[in-house]
Image (cartoon, rainbow, N blue to C red):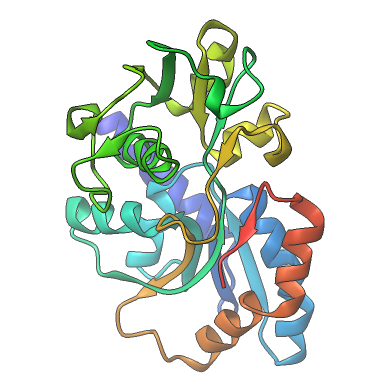
Length: 258
């Protein structure tokens, strides 16, 4: 445990060493979040705001760093995740803007149309509660299954009310779903992992749209919602420039949510 604490402290020290006073410090994961932030850097500079992008490879540290004021904001998660980590870690973070959706989608190496799923087909879905429910809601919205409560963002396969094709659900770590794709009839894969595996929105048999409750959000500490630099950041992220960049660059693999 002591070693883990030392490692966490060392990680924080690295973050702190690259942060300069006076910057607007925003934590982000590399793709697409940091790429999107790079687009608005010159616009904020014109307003006298020096945007400092601090990249993270996980979702926990950017929230802890925001809570302890090492960051001014973060951009790397959706609202269900934020709500859970707020509760689990006793954080005081709030969402102030929806920016984009990284659509979760149904992919298959065996069929070309979602309606071709046969009886008792094996569908792989993410094992974590947030994205597992997300996968089932996607199928519910397409009329493939019926959930007891499609607004339940923690739904599991035990919350399925009707399953006409008697689909079998196999749960796996989200990052492993692309690797198991040849071994199942279909898999429901998060957008970031799909992109990393060379899959695009055009390959999906079924895809979330911008109405998804899993839109990626801009997050700040409670009480900082109306800071002038934070409001400028929010406005820049929800600009037509960013919308065009997302649409032109990601071709449906990332969808504007504003």
